[in-house]
Amino acid sequence: MEYQKMLLGEKPYFVSCAHSSYPMHCHNEIELLYCVHGKLRATIENVEYTLTEGSILLVSSLAMHQITIDDDSFALVLEFGSNFLGSRFNEFTTQKFSKCLISPDDDCEYRSRLEKPLKRIYEEFSRPDKGAHWAIQGFLFEVFAMVVRYVPMQPQSAQKLKSLDRYLKIQKVFELVQNEYHLPITLERAAA
Image 1: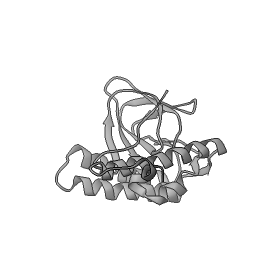
Image 2 (image 1 turned 60 degrees about the vertical axis):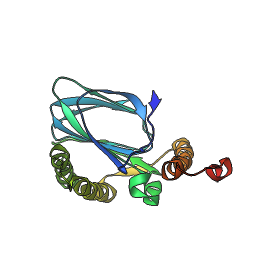
Image 3 (image 1 turned 90 degrees about the horizontal axis):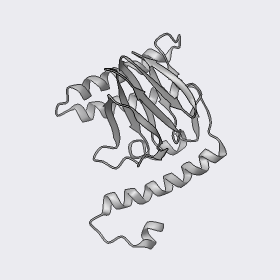
Image 4 (image 1 turned 90 degrees about the vertical axis):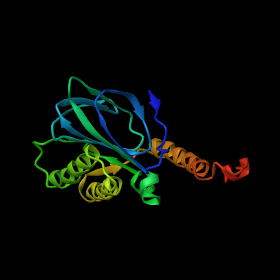
């Protein structure tokens, strides 16, 4: 098990296509996987899920998870957290997803609403142009709005909340270093 580093790049989110497996890890960002082709397996907090084409997997903040991808299967991977959502993310992390897997066979009203922007993100990611970053960012806000509105959630455990609080405090130090690496940063300033 490893803790995946927080997002520290030029974009406040992470979008990729996963063609290979990821070992057991966790991070404070929320992760969504959209199975674009084939079949893959995922484990979240010791519960196994099988994703088929069109399945959506929701991974809560700090949830231990791994992805196993075989053959020519692949999934769209989205990660977003405090860099993307600001202080609104802190409110969202006090809860976890009650239902992690939304399969094509599920008869829930929000599945198609959530899938539409995921398909658009995949299209923009697959054929990037000058406006792709802005389109992806807009669709990510739409995905987040659908998740907040429709996906069932329950409170995180007290232990998870304590761990998350530590990581969010550390995130502020990373942001300070990222934004002001060219200036002298004192220990007192980083601690504050």
